[in-house]
Image 1 (cartoon, rainbow, N blue to C red):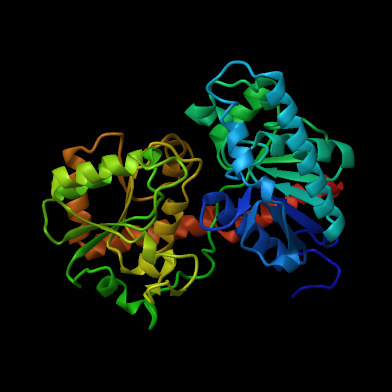
Image 2: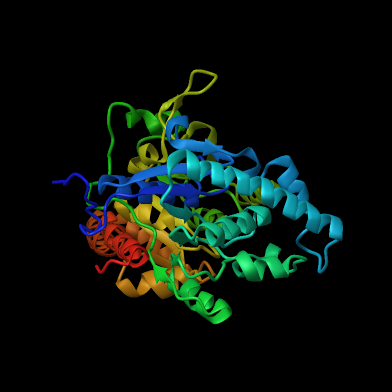
Length: 433
């Protein structure tokens, strides 16, 4: 039961107007998904959420569009191309950064004034420098307004090779992330927490990525019952789902090799997502691997959307949550992940998952006791053998599914994020939890 004028995150904190800011809130990228979960949790507990970005899914009534905030805006992309892979920058580049920063500050101030924002929630823009002027603008606005801020950091510059060499190291030190007195820094894993403390001397709280484990996963219904048929799969085919963008750090070549070594004509590998924002070279490589392996692979990204509907050709569109109930196995052979949304989704839908022991999984997830098919950078015969066994034994799959779901509920449910967000707001507002 909600009480008017009181936040159920913490009864001592009155409802606040929170402003989420990022380069984009659109589609199914990890930042957009996690921001949406936070927003739903905050709104369910009495707060109001508004949005600012360069591209937006939220309606105009609750959002503020600033096109130059998008990292792929032509002017932004042109400027960013001059900042990394070099060790110095021209004065003209510095001037261009500051000019764009000032325009973005105007946009942020307009957003704050339009919706009466009381708490700022920058999503990843003070962590990974995909838009340097935006991070600088955000930092200056926080310093100038003194508005309480929960800075939600998903990825940092030191975690991406393409940001290692930089002509903007001064800006990275001052704003990615900034050290200011009224910011609560939030990271999504323990490795980021330790590195943030080591590199910047900044304390942070861990709020892991979450899913609504309190609500059972949706299943097969009248709309999505024909997913297999629409994807060209027979009922007795073994549906292996690779539910990630096609980018190199996802290690998808291991999924291809696994299917090859299973050596079963019924096994079909399905890619649910397109290539990401890193070009098509990796996709080309994968297609060559697929041809060499002579396996059956389906690319269905053009049939998977953020919501149900039809495409321009009149074909049904499905959500990723329409697809999961139909698969038999999830492959998640990522080389690196900030956390692992696809892992949480797999156990939410009670599916067995082949997971590479990337660093965050090894440190933060595996010790909790999840039952998975683990590979340690190499696809060994033991991994292939265990995969065959799991696919052949329904009782084993059910035992794993039950254990994994209970762990998800305990450690990665909305209630976990609700409690931790309440503590962050309490700290900012000077209230005890």
